[in-house]
Length: 130
Image (cartoon, rainbow, N blue to C red; front, side):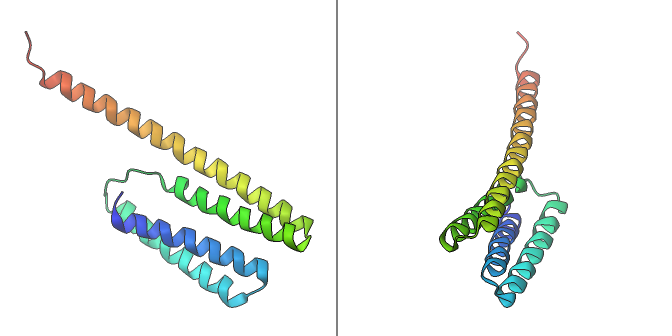
């Protein structure tokens, strides 16, 4: 994966977690900082994607994992504080993250299959006729 794209995705995940934690604990600065870092990461990732650089992992897989982590933190914090609504929101976020990760995985598998097909076609084309 391209370094710029990977860094952008990392900032998206980190920002999402900071933003979610800030909301959970009621820290407006942490929420704002997280949202800003997430936005910067989205811009960095989009710039790398639009530059035509080859990427090996679909961004939805990584962002989906971030949502799963954020959901787990929410769910755990809700369990500790006895807040069933927060537990439910955490479960929902984890499920959404699993779906996003799965969608990215499907795109990765399709891309890998297409790449393998092209490589096989190239190998067959380059093979001596005999």
